[in-house]
Length: 431
Image (cartoon, rainbow, N blue to C red; front, side, top):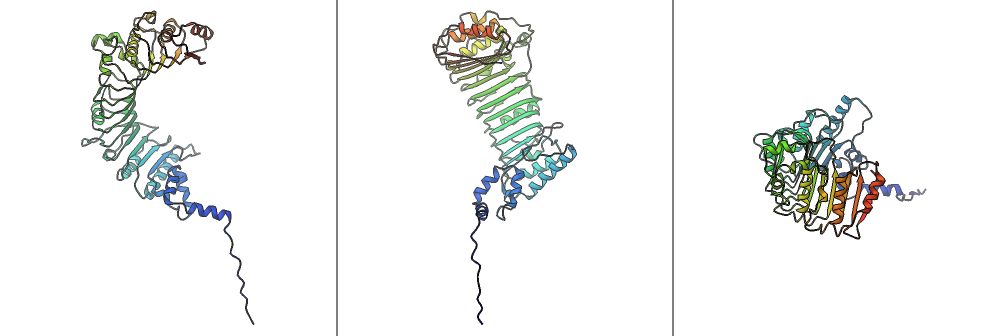
């Protein structure tokens, strides 16, 4: 009796199996790139894809905990807080490898003491980027171990109280510092900036504790500030090229001028020899108008090609300071003027300022101009007329009024103005 053994034909891999194998057999560096682009929640879930993917997420160097990662349906703040803390604890406990970036920015997370523990954990790694945004509760004071992270390249703090330990010697490798809604003393601020020799970008918004801003940063290239302060000066900032600065409180030039007759304009620009872009926001032009205002700066801003100014066109001193700036930028290509009308002011009003012959030479390179927030009053229209008649290469003037009131009359008057450039196009934007 013979026994015949029959073998089933080998099954060809299905399309689904092929797709599965393609995912499981991806090179390790490709998996790392995929995981680095996923929210931490989805990166953890990738463990179910295959054995090769299991716990692969635990080696990703960038950990971001924000609202994109976790979305809780519950409105119970205690539940949300406990859930967040447990998730972050779990991720940090299982993480295996260096952590280069740590971002904490969940809208429902208070400045809890658990954050101290997390910062201690990441400080033991070669952390390069830290972002702490505490959206609720009182100012959070980072622990002293944060200031031991000497590999930091980028530091971003929101709603924090900065008080480094006495032995803090600065961040030698820090290139970008972003401080918003912070409390910091004058001495700490000056020491922090001057002890970061590699600093290239500095953002400072809505701060308390500092009234006199002294910026001593030899490699600084970008400076963005907005807040309430009394004075600002630059030291050793020859590389600074992009500056945006806003003073969030009105000032009385007569009162301050009686105390200090020195030129704010001259002192502001003396250490900015290579500035290329300048934005003067809120009431900072009033600050620059304090004291002596020259007809032009002794050292012209030859590299400055973009200038943005918020101005009260009826304020004589602000107009004088603005004219000084315009005369001092011979290579200006783009100009933005934002009207800031004041209902009441003790300053001398300027009704015919821009009618006078102020210009000894033309705006030789000015191509683009935008004037926003105007209401069509005489001082505003005189300024536009002044620009049009002195800009031989102007390509485009964009006008955006504050409201629709008197819109038609404003448009008709603009069309009547003489233009030095036959190619100048006037664009009218609805408010």
